[in-house]
Image (cartoon, rainbow, N blue to C red; front, side, top):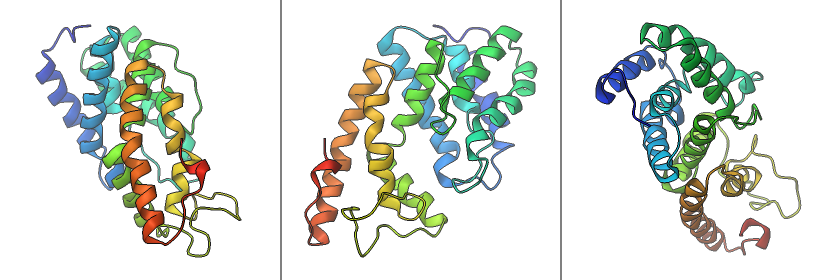
Length: 226
């Protein structure tokens, strides 16, 4: 599982430099801080699971959001494929072999929720889990409202905050994104390690929803809880 070749810190610095060259104007949910958290998550998962080649994984983690189209972009589902394509020349300059490059590219392509591509390698499974973990917990709460705020979407529907009498629509209301996607993520994790971490983070999100309902003088619907 060792990174191999360049020392971990040197390779990480070179990958970060390459990433920063592509991040101009990116949203705050897909910035350098996000990438560093994903890499930290990936290391924890790989160590706990005892599998995954870290040299492949570090490159996939740092380059997985090279191209991050806005959430409301019609081609949003193509972001991961575009990122994998953009990563190839970077990997070549860092001495990655064609086989390593292909492994990194698959992990990047498969990490995306919207692309709906099954991960076929340990590194792809771990990266997908690591990225999804960053959508949960305290950071996940902050990211939800950062992205929705940037898109001009209100926190909730004033007439029906918890969609009791309407269909969920996360393109209109920020909080709808939780039951529509985020609250489902723990059950979709590939690894046991990520599933445990995800369920821990979910507790805070459920507490937030309960508090939100209380402040709105409403009862949180049971289908918003586990």
